[in-house]
Structure formats: C-alpha cells, structure tokens
Image (cartoon, rainbow, N blue to C red; front, side, top):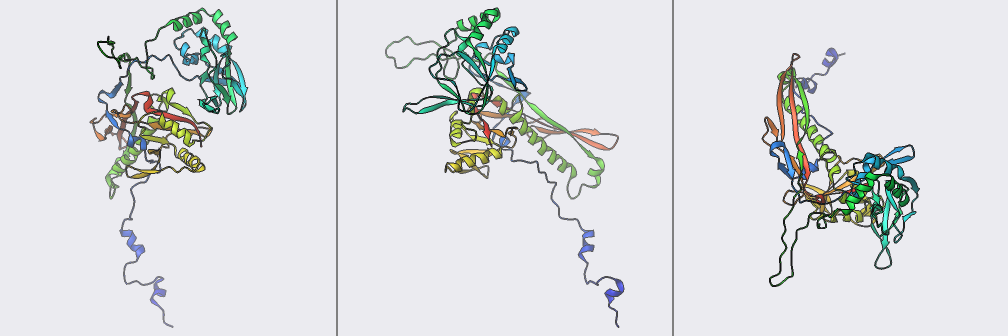
Length: 463
C-alpha cells in the first residue's frame, strides 16, 4: 500500500502560502476606534456662534417694569404639602417683601385641598375670594365663546397660581372657570385668612400699601417702558418728547468650561503608533465626549441652559398630555420666525403618533444634508439631552436664532492658546515619573437668549 505524502507529514501539501500562515505576516483591516455615545448634536450645529472676547457677553435690553410672574415651589412631607415661604415672592405683589416673618405667616395660612378630574375650583363671575397655588396637577381656564361654546384660555399646572388679585383692596370677580383635568393638589388662601395675617403683620400691611400706591410708567404689551409717539395728527400739533430707557443692570453671560485631563503612556505613543496615531485617536474620542457634555450643559445647566432660561410667559402646557397638533401650533405661534424645534427622539415619536391619529402628516426638509421632519415648515430636530422625567414626560423647545433676529445664540471665544477646534484647546501638561503624558483638554462655551420670546418650551409632554 502506497502512503500519501499528507499522511506522512500530518497535513496537506500546498503549492502556495496558506492563508493561516499569511495572516501572521500581515495586519488586519481595521476601523478607527468607534464610540456609541456620539449623537447628531443638532443644537451645536444650528446655533449661530458669537465671538465672546473677554469671556463675557452682555445682553442689553429695554427697561421693563414687571413686578414678577414666577412659579411657586413647595415642600412635601408624605401627603402634606406646604409652600416654601420665600417662594411667595414669585407672586407679583409680594416680590419685594423681605420680612421673613410675614412670609412665614402667609405660608401657614394656606390650606391644602384635593380635587379630582372634572371638578370646578372657581366659577366665572363669582367673587374672587381665594388665592390658589397649584402644587400638583393640571387645570384649564374656561370661558364662554362667541358662539355659545366653551373655549380654553390656557392651562395651569405645577407651580402656577391664580387669584392673586385677592391681595388688592378690590379683588373683583373670576374672569374664567377653573376646572381640574387631572387629580390636583391645591393650596388655598381665603380672604378671611389673608385679612387676619394682614392685621397681625405691620410689615406686610406696609408693603402692600407701598406697592399698590406705586405708579408705574406706561408700558407696551411686552412690559417695556413705552416710547411716546404721535400719529394721525395734522397742523402744528404739540409732539410728545420721549427717550428709550435701558435696563440698568443687564445680564452678562460668562463662558462656561468642560474639561478633562487626557493621559497616554509614552510606550503607547512610541511603539504602537502605526498604522493609526494613538494620541490623535485618543484626542478625537475625548473631544467627542466633551462636545456631548457641552450640548448637555447648554440644555440643562441652571445658569445658562435653555430649559431653565426660558421666560415663564413662553412656557406652555399641553392641553391633554400628549403633544397634539394644537399644542405644536400654539408653541410656534408665540414668536416670529421660529427657526427650529428641538425634542427628545421619543417626544418626536409621540408627536408623530398624535399627527397620525388626526390624519395629519408632517412634511420633510433638508437640514445640513439630512432629511428631518418639520412642523408647519419648521425643522423638528432630535436632541437626546432634553431629559425624560420620572413621570414619563419631556419638553419641546422652539427657538428663533441669531443676533440679528434677537434670537438664541451660542457663545465661544476663538484664538485661544493651543487651539485644536474653535474655542477648544489641548495643552501639554508634562510627563510624570511613570512615563505618562498628560494633556488638558478644555472646551469653552455658553448660550444666551437675547429677548424673552426667542425661546419657548412646551412642557409636560407625555410620551
């Protein structure tokens, strides 16, 4: 019997180099390091960036004469809810009240009430006998329409208040019916309880007398000091004299920073730098992470983030929970030239479901080479930095952008030392005794809302 050569040597003979052996002499085809945390970062892409020399940006506005229209916060102990005394200053007539004892006495005079969906808290035409603070829930203001139907005048939700005319000598009557659309927790201050506090507190009594006797200058519908003008006259009419007043203490936005120290061992950069530069790849991924944090801060930072710097008059609540076409229309109608809408991807899906339910199909547009959905022609862009709250709700942002249009702008400073990208630099910090190289990577940025109606938010969007 003849023995085959492959039986003698235990493997098959080849006339050319086997692939298994060839791989030992070749490098694999590989990708650069990949990163799952990279998002489109639409906010950073669509904002116009303003050069901020000196690290600060001052927003000069016309003088306004608003007494306050903020939201009230509460503290709860189990089922019991109490208003934080200092938060009562968010009610217009109490804004300048500094006496802590008077604020505490007012806070103690509120009583807690619970309402179920469908209950009326007030009736149109009845005397205003209570100041109501909404601790939790959603209510709608209703009034009769022109054609014997009932129309909605707006929605009140957590932190809103109604009936603050109770604090004036002539409270008048309710101009609307206030109806609960969900289960609500409300704190109520009755007229009798308020009068008892006023009688006991000389500081509160004096404060109200000063505020109610104060004469405010004429204002336009935005609360700005009015500019006296004349029109429609003929002949030699006496023309009014005027000037445009400015805010005495305009807001300044300082550049914020996101930083990290990148460490790379010298052994890696010495002998593992081919075919890819290890330091460049480490820097690339670090910069991506910094840009993600930058967008997060520009949305969520309490000092300059968009979610916390929208004017309260530009914050809307959904009518029923989900983001309906009616809600989206009201959101974009609050400002001229709404350029962009930003929402969490799940919120965009919820908008799509509501549109499909009504047989409405939003269009598409090209935005920087990407096809994105639109609402009434306004691009609707995904932003996963907008948070989803524990109760399953989120927000939708509407923006007018650009300094020329008095919109929302991004702030940065270019030309900084060791700059890698605009307003982002990488500075070598040295080598330690373990042969580790350190690089300080810094990104400088901020955002500014030039006038209140440049930014609006649709809140409590159920997903």
